[in-house]
Length: 259
Ligand code: ADP
Image (tube, rainbow, N blue to C red):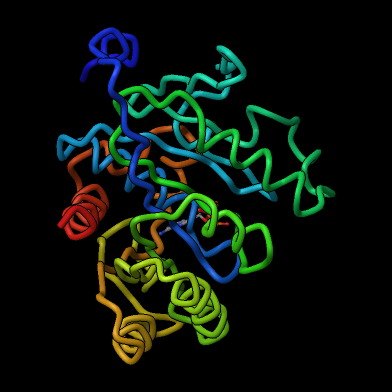
């Protein structure tokens, strides 16, 4: 995996802005950040030059997920320079701009400006920028989408009804703004037993897939609720960097997104 420095040296004068893939959900806590990190790592493993933006104002978690908490981005001519992560994915997080918890009280325009700084950073040769969107479907999300025009959106939902109702709001945000919907990921779909790996369905599963297809959206895959995914995320070792069942599940989703 080439370091960001190598990539920058190879950079030519002609540079295109990266294509943005927005990862969105109707509400928080459904695994949007987990999916964003793993999608970025998996796309990198598939050979794409990928960057990651953590636009989650209310709970920026990508620095921890991507083991780059200690890094501080530099700036050149008022443009931020992304920090490196151990997975070959340069990244910038809202947490790099503000101390944890401080941005909570931000009003729309402030949050929007900060978000633009992250997206308009010096991404070098990055061709695909995975943006972990703020949860929900308010003004900040709408103006980000209008201003930065993602090439596509991935919607994350849990199988529960409430999350699905919220997810439909996220879907309509992108429909209104003519951003193509790449598809839907059902997260926390079934519980994976840490002992035997059997998947049980305390809340049911398949709800997101059915609702997604009713909305004419492609289904990108299902990730079970697995202690291992939470542990590895907390430890800054995204499952997509490995080759076990959850790693393979994220890689399969990335292949569909890339297609
Ligand atoms: P969001 O970005 O939607 O708020 P997160 O990605 O931060 O959600 O996930 C919320 C919590 O749930 C985190 O602690 C995360 O590690 C955990 N989590 C997410 N997806 C899974 C999963 N499939 N299995 C186990 N834990 C998960």
